[in-house]
Length: 141
Image (cartoon, rainbow, N blue to C red; front, side, top):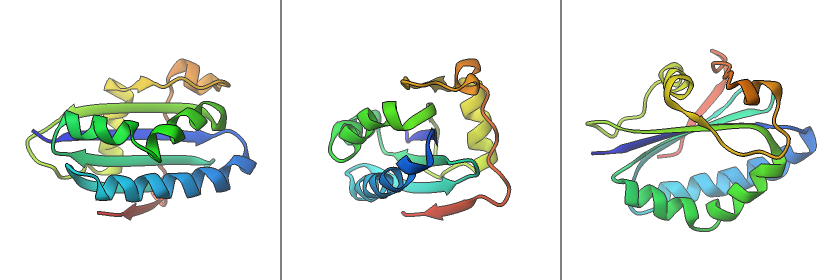
């Protein structure tokens, strides 16, 4: 069964945004080319918030990707760059990606916080603002 992964990250300072965006695009290209990846979509939201949604053939495929460079080292930098970080994984029958409002609902209901060094009040309370209707979405694969 395919595995869906959704992440939401808020970059805490504007001066981290260029490095974050460049590193995230590299990781997205890595994901799209990784064995077992079915689909990749990115969403640039308001207030320095960025979402990813990926579909994988198996848990093993997502775990291999998560630890490989550039994604693995990038995850460690997010501790300093972000003040909000959350994720959710689930399995489903098909590999299609959910709509962003559905991804938000699943993240809010079933997701978890990731560790960040400077958590915001929203991060601590696990309050996740839904994506703006006019947020820019990009499908990579």
